[in-house]
Amino acid sequence: MAAKDGWLEAPYSLEGKRIWIAGSTGMVGSALLRRLPKALTVDRRALDLRDQTGVRRWVLENKPEVIILAAAKVGGILANDTYPADFLYDNLMIEANVIHAAYEVGVEKLLFLGSSCIYPKDAPQPIKEDALLSAPLEPTNEAYALAKIAGIKLCQAYKRQYGCSFISAMPCNLYGPGDQFDERVSHVIPALIMKAHAAKETGAETLEIWGSGTPLREFLHVDDLAEALLFALRRYDGATPLNIGSGQEVSIAALARMIADIVGFKGKLVYNKVYPDGVERKMMDSSRINQAGWNPSIDLETGLKVAYAWYREQAGLRDAA
Image (cartoon, rainbow, N blue to C red; front, side):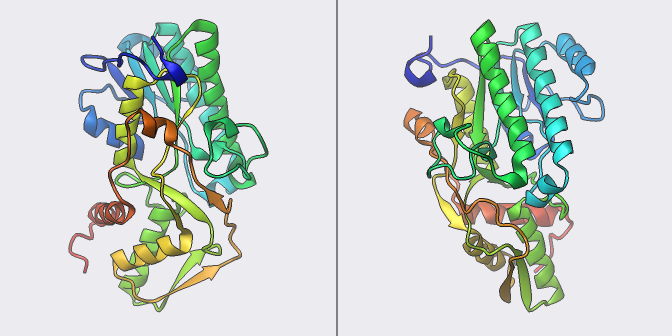
């Protein structure tokens, strides 16, 4: 039975449940898999989540009782702005196929992972969940945001029409092990780590930062998010999407300097204002999940050191100075 604001009076037990992590090879999925090592997984080469028939067949055969829908096509500002059709189509198909298959087989609980970009460009800060659809979106990632909004609304519709226990969680900007260190699609933190490391290794005197450096952003370590998602699965059953953030914000300029210091680059940071900043400030109001009992435990500096160590290991740079 759900209590006020969607929080359960008695926690839902995950013990012994067949849990499918859709998107288990991604950053969020990998963090969840470290906590749920017995979870069901399927490689994207074996199952294209954009294929409705394939998804339905796989779910019918494997009969998951819980689904965490962390699979998505993701990327930074440049990728979103360059490939809007891919971001809209792929994400719409993934979420529609998985959510509908979950309904068809009677999945007990589904958690859909959204994104803070669903909120309006000029939403009041910090952003509350009720800001959804209250004003226009940020143009540079509108396609991805629209797809994620559709996923939220799909979960709400199945809950309203069929009584399905389908919930949605909206994390702030994420980083950590498993992130995409690819200059074509990387988000800001992995992009800065790669650029700072390369600048240090080549002895460069300057490090170019895209944009003005003034925007403020909130970052959450992926391991903190994984803990929050499991908390939400056990405790939350509301229709309203649930914000999950760190509660701390930092300017891109301060972030870049922090990363440069961690990497060991001592040169000058130069800002290229030809590149878009995106929204000036994006801070989530995570008070609902905080008041229910979850709070992050990894501070930004510690998390960035872990992310850089992971990048060096994956890139074969263990012995780098």
